[in-house]
Amino acid sequence: MTETSLNTLLDGRVKIHQPVTGYRAGMDAVMLAASLAARPGEHLVEFGCGSGAALLCAARRLNDVSFSAFEIDPVAADLARRNVVENALDGRVEVIEADIAALIQERVADQVFFNPPFFDDPAALRLPKVEKQRAWLSGHAPLPVWIKSAARALRSKGYLTVIHRADALPAILAALDREFGSFVIKPIQAKAGQPAKRVIVKARKGGRAPAVLLESLILHDDGKRVYSPAADAIMHGSALVLDA
Image (cartoon, rainbow, N blue to C red; front, side):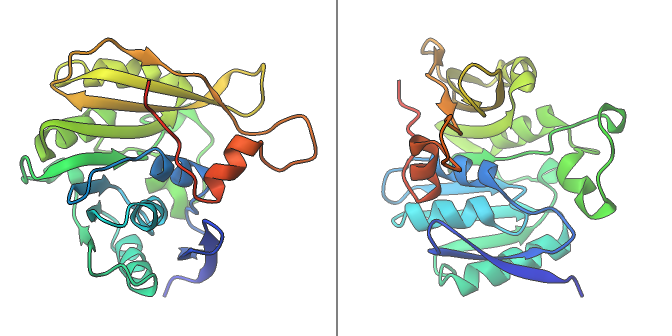
């Protein structure tokens, strides 16, 4: 049995059991969840939910929409289901053990969101522990496969939101080009004056509006705070607005 620890997010409003030695969700999951906005009654789908950090944070913030999440790892999927129940969200959140590369559902989602594995090539980084490799390495499903699957799952004019490495932005836009448009790009910098390390990209299926590059989110200021005021607000449950 996988050893887990109990952690909390959003000021304790989200409880999450995570593997002690496997992949553990951090601020990327919270920022991804914070970047989502939805109308009442929409259905949102997460690909690769892991133990459910982004899923649960999004469901806690957006309490009038429903969620489905797909996860290929049976251990992670079981943890996510446990976390859904523990957070009393099982009435409108479901976790399905499945390979997103093989999904056949079409046009069922108003929005898709994901935090995909960051690397396609094992030679591109020093390999993490075995328990973390599936979360870091895309294996048989590189980024274009995730995006193609998202396009298949989304209704016309539905939205895709993804968080990734900032240096992967050209690859993201290239993969989105055939099916998506109306890009909104939010760079995320550790500190002011430093290159962005992360980027959140929101795109619309069939969108035609001009791309928008937003002001960067700065995670840490030069003072004694752990986070900048803007980042601290997100960690406490505020939205990360992606409107132009």
